Length: 68
Image (cartoon, rainbow, N blue to C red; front, side, top):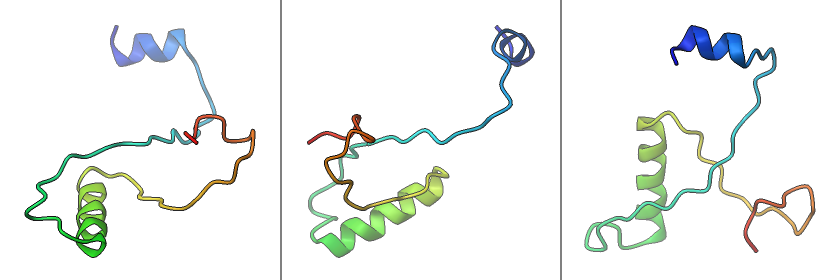
């Protein structure tokens, strides 16, 4: 199915965000602190055009997909 066929089969006018929780394995000899990890995460997300969002969601049914 090409892009035109997909658009015809699943028309949409609204765009909404898709939130992903990802795990990235890194070299422990390179990433040794939270500062290193934060720097790596920012660079990784920029390279792959992600938006890094790092904050706590409360235990709220609005966010059932967040692991507790």
